[in-house]
Image 1 (tube, rainbow, N blue to C red):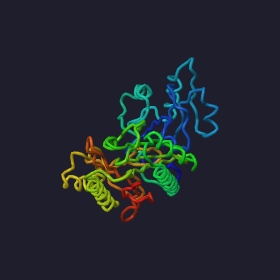
Image 2: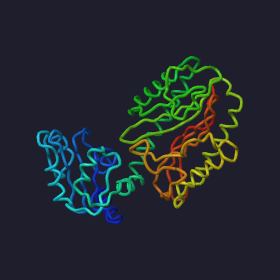
Image 3: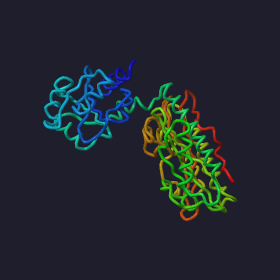
Image 4: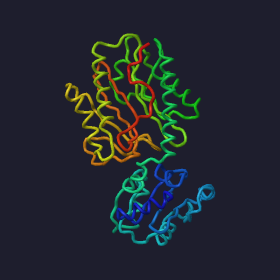
Length: 358
């Protein structure tokens, strides 16, 4: 069954009779490509029986190389309204419920909804997004390859770690390693010393000094899929009290991983990790969710939050990354990428979570 057929089955099951996607991850997952996004409305409209593009004429010839779906073209001199009306007449002129891409521009969304003021509105997370959460064998293989590359990038950073090297220079080391493996760096969070207590530190020109712990959170992209891994390193002896916090975060990771299995609510994984840290008296210093989905986006569903009612299913992929951040001292985050299996989970990284010391 094709992904488009699976989507239509999902639409029927959820009472959605029109899905509208803008160029982005949803569209790319469904069709294997996405046109160039800009201010011109370019929308993929999917009904239960028909589908096609509202397509800027400027992009039509290029996009035609990738799909046989019908186009309703419009030019800059005339605007999209007439073409949009024609498209809806063919695909679904009076939808009862339309699912809108979460990343669609606000002006494009309003254009869409102005044509169907009576329709119930929801987000495509319940249709395309729900299907994307369950990875197939090809997607899992791509994620495994990206995890292997990220492990190698971490190893390169560890090899480069020395007195005086800056956060930014360590990110550049990771970038070069990703590129050597045919990937591109997607982000690099390297925080040394007190900066390790900033969960999303912007890596800068601060040098690593003896006695610093360093948080290293990096990710790359290859073949349309991402990696995401966090480990800790230290130059010399770790600060007083560090081992206790590192061991506590690692215990939270282990507890969360042990709780993962089909049928469990996502919020329970967050709770298990948080309970470990709360019980030790550090709950106020664990300031973010326990994890997020990973696939063709760095952050995508499912999200491991305290209020998520989502039930885990085999094939879901997400991070497990509890952390403790002590302002003015140091922070610790340890991150695995977990795949839900039939009876538990498995992780992608081969790197130990132990503190790496030089």
